[in-house]
Amino acid sequence: IFEIRSAYKRIGHIPGFITTFGPMSIIGSTLPHTWWNAGLSFPWHDRDVYKRHQSEVISIIPLLWGAPVIYISSIEVAKQMMATNAAFGKPPEASRAIEILGPNIVSADGETWKRQRRIAAPAFNQKSYQLVWEETKRSFLQMIDHENWGDKDVVTIPDFNTYTRKIALFVISACGFGMPLDWSEPAQNERGEWSNREIITQVSLNIITKFIAPAWAYKLIPSKHLKKVDHAYKSIESLLNRLISSRGDEVKKRRAADEDLDDTVRDVFGRLVQAQLQGSSNPKMSLSDTEIVGNAFLMLFAGHETTAHSMAATLAFLALDTNEQDKLLAHIQEVVPEGKDLVFEDYDKLEGVLACLYEAIRLFPAGYILFRDAREDVVFTFPSIKSPGQDDAYHIKKGTSTIVDMVGLCYNDRLYPEPLKYMPSRWYGNTDRIFAFSTGPRTCLGMKFATTEAVCFLTHLLRDWRVELNLKDGETPAQWKEKYMKADFGITLTLSKVPLKFVKRK
Ligand code: HEM
Image (cartoon, rainbow, N blue to C red; front, side, top):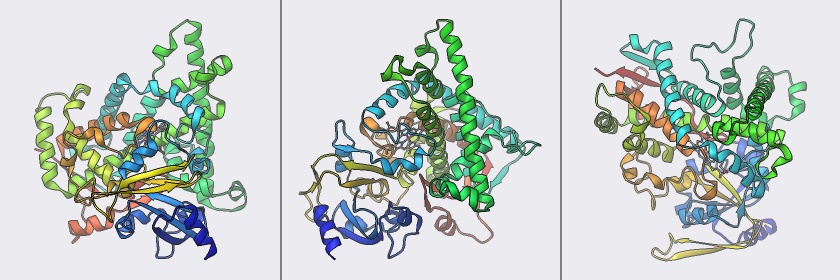
């Protein structure tokens, strides 16, 4: 009781609840959400948690393990935290899961972050988005060709995530790393060696195991799964090192030929390698060996998992809501009438496709928690639930752990009326106001990369194919929705399986 009282005092008596393990602690986050353990997914399962405590900012006090933490679903507070010069920083322990292969732009803070962002940001520009568009189109056509969709009127897929993952991986591999992949390449060759695609797929599927399992477990526990994970991570390290050395040779050659590298090296990976080679000659623009591997891994992971699941979620919602799909088709046909080729310049006109994507990302926000620690005493001011029309103000002490809860925020009915409803129209004329990619100076660097890829893929697919639910015998759409539209909480928030059917349009 003493512990709880002092925790409440430290946290400024912010309303909230007590649980056994902190939602972010290893035990609390691994165990499922139950009445005695909040778990990572409590905002998903307990949608009324903020209303019940009459506050868009709540506290969680763990009884047995973990530190007290403040969860935030208020857009005003989230913006205050993410603003320039905000008094909040990233806690190093929170980013460990994505630092498996080394420190990177997402995990870094302060001057280290500024340096890394300065190096990587110029790689995200109109030219690279055009490349993303072209690569997405190439991958889409490869999918249609190699999976023989052209010969079929109906294509049934048990889990469309496997397809969107492949598309997203192809795009990041070609546009981020200058390493185009081939759809028909098998996962393993005749000698049993994994293809690059298989290595990256296994790495991203097993990131949680890699984070949780200690190094000794791989040597002492005779588990096939651990062996596979170990092999995947050793292979990715060696793949990245090989890539670094081959791109390094290329950059050196260009330097020797006196080429202006700032202008010619435009892909993310090329820029990272160039910064590594710069070494100490320009400390403001250089990266260490571990930073380059860490960032390369981060780009592969962030640039592929998030976008893949968002595209699959959009298709799932459109399969569930045939009216929305019909409206979207009419919009696509208006922008790109039959016979007209779809080109990058159409992106800005395809607002309706972007709105469908944004609404799916709102309902399944891939980046679902933003960790920040208060670096000084601050005051949070936000509209009160208890006294409508007035503000609540909480004093937050330096050192307090806070989390912007993207699920809480994206399902906040003050911002999004009827929050459970898939309603793309809320984004019409409003597409610059999405928060699911964060905001402020640390906003997602790959946002336009992701939206260009998704708009290109979804438009090409939906123009020619009608998406429907892949129902089992006797299964109703409501049962399908109940079974599959559930979130998995890992490093990112995803849908575990998306069984879909595609019917060729006449
Ligand atoms: C639907 C797709 C995506 C979503 C929803 C998403 C979401 C987010 C969010 C919420 C953050 C902020 C994390 C934080 O502050 O803790 C973030 C940061 C970041 N994202 Fe994305 N992302 C997506 C796609 C991508 C892609 C395709 C790339 C790269 C090709 C990328 C690269 C990054 C990077 C480098 C950061 C760190 C920015 C910084 O701290 O300066 N993301 N993303």
